[in-house]
Image (tube, rainbow, N blue to C red; front, side):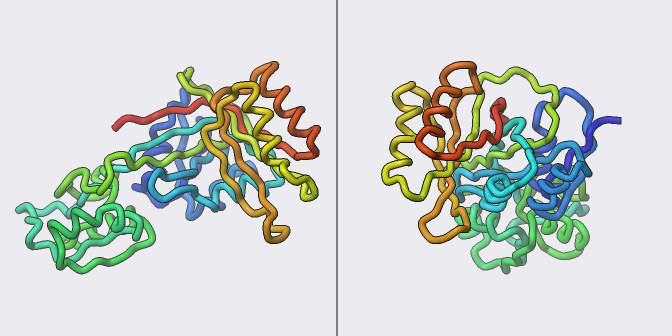
Length: 286
């Protein structure tokens, strides 16, 4: 029996697409869970082997629930891989004997983010339809599939046409073609993955409260070694106003010299540093 992999559900979401797209070289059994926290805690507790959750969207920014859990976790749950998935929204309608023209659609259902991402299409082609918000794009797809006699449409993933009796009324209706979401694969044990052209290391840096200029000096430890950082993000420590953790993405895997030297220099400043993972990065092309 293969490993179990939990993902942010329900079925038919972009997170399930990501879970299917990670190039894991062994069989996995995928299981949808209700929230990011449910997925991460299921992996941390050992109820499942692996988890896939969203980390960052190129349009809407970081997923704070994922970041905060990784920051404040007590268990060692490393990032094993990262995948950038293009977010392509489609207009879905129920299968019926005759195609449903756009002009006959009276209601569009989807998650608020998906509706917002398709604002231009809706304004141009469906300016007067009723909009109904749902908890997920997958829920919208399911509702439309269960009401084939209603002139409704859902905005969601192409994957939903495999799960429900739906067809694509219009493809790629999102406003921005460069809309990507990064998903991470987490687990307590490594899994077989192919070699990637890009490797990353993510660390968490906590500054001493009584050291002015500590962030500048911590970043300088990377700069003079010519180590490139692709992301710097702050999150509250929850200890008081003005107290932050800093998450750094480093564009290389952990080596024997450069990164250990930078980490040691940062710790000598009185900073705390914790490695969240050193892993391959994959870009999924639709």
